[in-house]
Image 1 (spheres, one colour):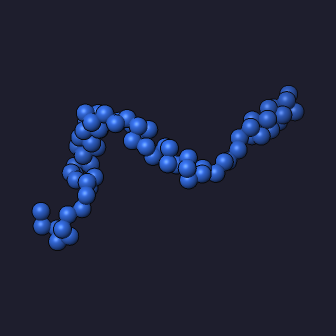
Image 2 (cartoon, rainbow, N blue to C red):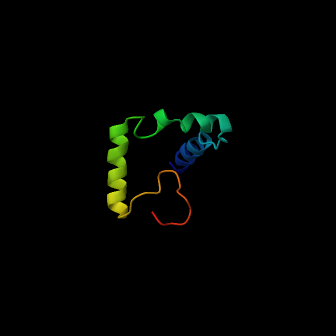
Image 3 (cartoon, rainbow, N blue to C red):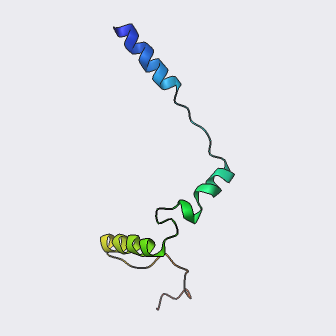
Length: 71
């Protein structure tokens, strides 16, 4: 019984491997179509609304302004 358990555990861990993610694979995963909203503007607005409601903050997702901090 114990030997069978050790064999199963050894087979389970031998199937696991750590592969390095290549830069060109990261590019594919970073595309807008691979994001949660999938390029849908309404869904993106909805997700951002939920995020900002939970964080009690707004902004930080766009382009930076002049730098003085006086909006």
